[in-house]
Figure (cartoon, rainbow, N blue to C red):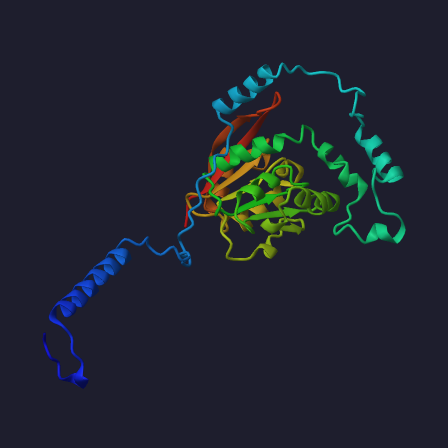
Length: 319
């Protein structure tokens, strides 16, 4: 038996050894447990560049078309006459507008209450989409234009696009949806078209958060778009053919410095008589003076109806 003088306490040697051994085992178990614990899953703030957007496919693929055909065949679908049938009451736009004005829908608020429950009251003419018939071809053709231009200009969501004469956004809606917020710009002169675009199309398509810059103006005045804005794509669909040649050249002069050098593109649809009427040499000379170059003529087929678009391409060859 060992005698420890401290405070007269007597501890046997076997008990001391046992205590030390137990402490060592406990320490070993504790260290093992800590080393095998799962790593901390506490949330950490994301890095500034940690979110990478995957490249969105733009055009319809051959596989997509085959899938649509297979769905039609699998369901035994055939085009039928759109007549009155159970649960479906076909109406023309004019009939639909009359119903809306007369009956206001199946469920609606009366009197003053009718003004307190709708955040963005929209005119009936826009609600029945009369403006979809403002063009000489189906509304669906807007998607065709978007696909051709976006792929031809090699756009990415962070590109900036300017449309001259966006109308009711038949094409513009697709660019707005694809591009980052604030990256789609438009100059349009027609008030009713702008009302349809801003009061109906953007809200109904859930695109208000994209904040496109849409300006009412004419005479090729781009002063409200910022002097330092550089565009990857500038396009005019069936617009220049309604303008005097002199005004088109004024517009090109103002836009040339806003187009990204070398990679940026200007596309003009239908014809370029503002250029051809000058003659080949004079047109080339004027373009060169603006730092622009004619790159060629293109055609693009529609996906849904028998139609093709003609486009003329220009680029900026001087920085």
